[in-house]
Length: 120
Image (cartoon, rainbow, N blue to C red; front, side, top):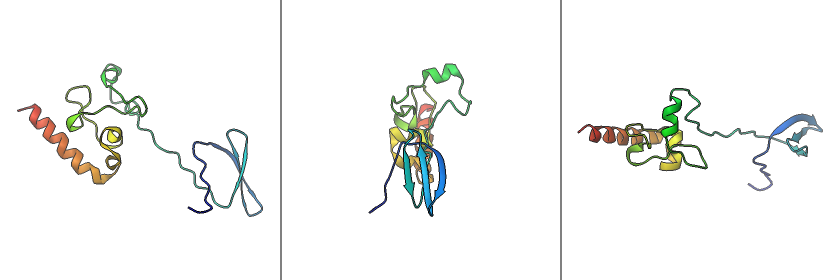
């Protein structure tokens, strides 16, 4: 990346145009100067946020301590039998491809196989 400087894990509190560039004040009070700025917010899945799982059910779901995502076993099944998670919340258990549509087909087939084998 050559002369590109990356400052991750920081919050920008003020941006001002100065001498054809940008002056940024960061959350710690420090100043930074740049020609271009790319701000990315990141994303942290939170299975409680949509509000579709009740508190009693949420308490039964075992979570990865660092990500807060459900720990998933075979067929994307959580610690609650019959409750499966796909998409971003399955990344810690199944890998980064699960963030993308490309992983959706695999996840769907695996979940379907698990559900069918459970009902056999």
